[in-house]
Image (cartoon, rainbow, N blue to C red; front, side):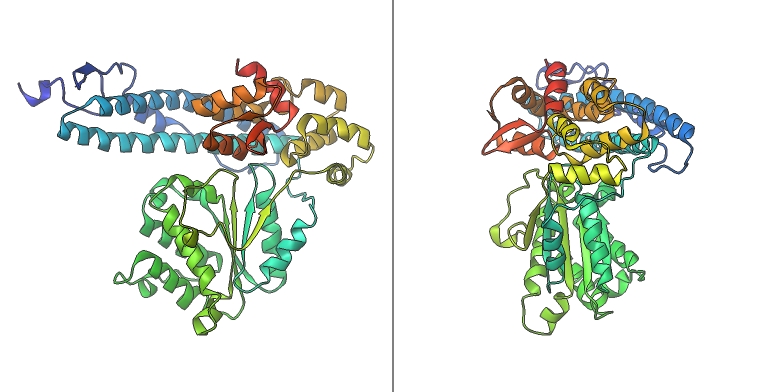
Length: 467
């Protein structure tokens, strides 16, 4: 039979009618050419708000919502396709065809991840638009003593390593900026690496990732990259990155360099990068303890690693940066801090009794509290009305709640686990990985080894959506 007529032939990533392991893949709706075309035809728009005009902001929000809806449909198709290829890989017995499926699965999973990243970018843009529409001041920082003082004292220590950990939207990035600003006041150099901005192709190759790190930090310091001069192929990758910092970035000045690494959890899913980079950071931390010329150089480097509470992959104790340095767990606001936030937003008329009602619904979650207070400041609405509508699609948290629902619906294990949590009247024991991921999303609080909804808002909303 000619090759073009072979029913087993994989062509254009279209698996319709393909015979595999004696079975037939039912993938009529899964066509990579169509999905790929749709992906490239989606316009994501700008990632930041460039206009101060409210009407334009609202139009941008509507376009972003349309883009999100279109991408979600494409994501569903692509997810179905990946599932079919995985099923085919299990059924296939022919070694050559099994290899083809492995290659194809890797490509399609990359496409799926790209779609997920684009959807996350749109969600962030929608949130930025929403905050702008309310006139929310996202630069307001409420101190949570003694955390700030501990960080400031820690960052001036030679060879410091500070680890900031908290669920999403708890103010980790704002605290990082406060630490960097304090460091600059001490005359230190600062650089910030946001791993959320790293393209997928950067995170799939260790050499590319480490060179991106070197160039990005040099750029933050207004230095030429000079990779050609300081990167020698005869050395290993971690050794080259270490030499670059030691002989170039740290050697050009006597002032300490504070490197903040935000969204570190993004590396958890990249086994080619995560353990090696952790080993590198631990090596730099240990080098600062040496009492020689090399140790004096590394004492100038101060690290601040920011990550979510999601469980990270297991590491050798001696290779991990997560069991050394100064750990900082960022808590929720207490009533006094919520009161301070209300006062800074010129809402001094909100008494503690009113704020207590708000906290009974959303807890002390910094994002939810600030969102509510900013809305009360900008809109003619009573607190009672805000609280009544909060768990509904009419409420001010609707976009945030739908975003959290999207995360659950695109991970069946998380959805099933969280359904158990919100339906129960007592703490629920979940699989460790599921529990940590729900905690990372800010959806649960951990009570010993069990989970409870992190606030009543989530319990009310999700108990009706996850039936």
